[in-house]
Amino acid sequence: MARPQDIDLSTPAHAPGSPRLLTALLVTMAVQMVSTGGALALSTIAPIAAAALGVAPALVGFQVSLVYLAAAVTSVMAGGIVRRFGPARASQISMATFVIALPAFGSGSLPLMAAAALIAGFGYGLNNPAASQILIRVTPEGRRNTVFSLKQAGVPLGGVTAGLAFPAMAVALGWQSGLWLAALAPLALILVLQRLRPAWDADREPGARIAQDWMQGPRLTLREAPLRALGLLGLLYSMLQLSLSTFTVVMLVTEHGWSPVAAGSALALIQASGALGRVIWGFLADRLGAGFLVLAIVGAISGAGALAIGPAAAAGPGVQLALLCLIGNTTNGWNGVMLAEAARRAPTGLVGAVTGGVLILTFGGVVIGPAGFSAAQGLTGSYAATFALFGLVSLAGAAFAFRVHLANRH
View 1 (tube, one colour):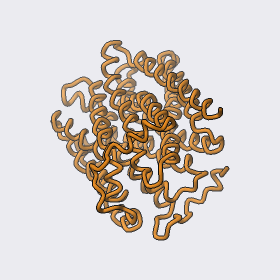
View 2 (cartoon, rainbow, N blue to C red):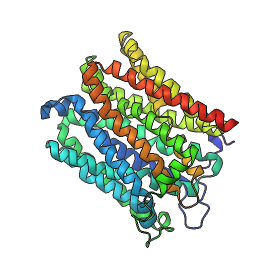
View 3 (tube, rainbow, N blue to C red):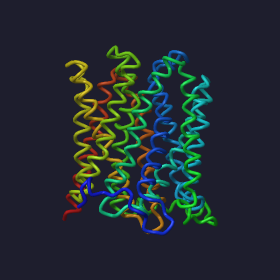
């Protein structure tokens, strides 16, 4: 099994004219970073934006849920879009939605901000099917968990960037100006992707109909037990993952008296721990050859950590931050393993469709998670108590993943 120092990211693709692995990995990671940062932009400045708009900060959970609700719908069609236009063009479409959505988030109009969340979600749903389609072409089989996890590190890295940049820009420039300025990042990536289109989109099928057999990916996911299990784990684990990204800043500011910039910096550190976690857990899955065992471990640690958030807060800011970083490390550590396992089990030519099918369930958890957290927090009046409830969900997922691991061994 390959060690990190053995992985040659400059290895050329297996097919002539295909992109090199390093190029594919860096660009797909950048697309993931920009889209994640855009989706979480309002979460990082929720106390500031909510005060300006005259609404409760916890309502940001519904904005995040709208993003991922649209992403779930897109996942159904993503396989057809990637086949017809190619992964580079699909990624350009994704970035174009954020060029539109980020300025709209800064409009100050609640209806327009809600519409922007749906637009951003449409683009977000294209990212993983497009990236999986290109990475499966250029990644040796024994390194897929590692490479896919490196690419998925773009999610917490996007959170790091958002947590550092948006609160600072909100203080220095105003919360709306920072959102408008951020639209330059996806615009730049559209130009980069244009240069990659000849190689990335060489095997696209211009005659493919997007609506043709659009349920192919979901049918395969529900029919095959391992794919079905991956989708269910994505649903359970994403509830805590997105709630941690969405509500950490609000919790630290409103319940524990942190300043918005300090809370945003804490979120950045938590997300950085998540980026490291994705690489560590992906590498471990390759070393062990047991993806479901790794999924069980990260779910158990995440769930136990969420149960301890309340007591850790009483122990002081240092302990609280250390625990949140541990949770960030593990609750962000499963995505790359899940996507690599799904791609490995997908029929030839249907990686995008199968990835989309698995992600439909995952996005279901993302939709339920932040909105459900907002509702539960309103009932409990405590962010720590609500995190504990979501920790129980993660523990249930860990038990299920371990059961699947044992069944695979037998």
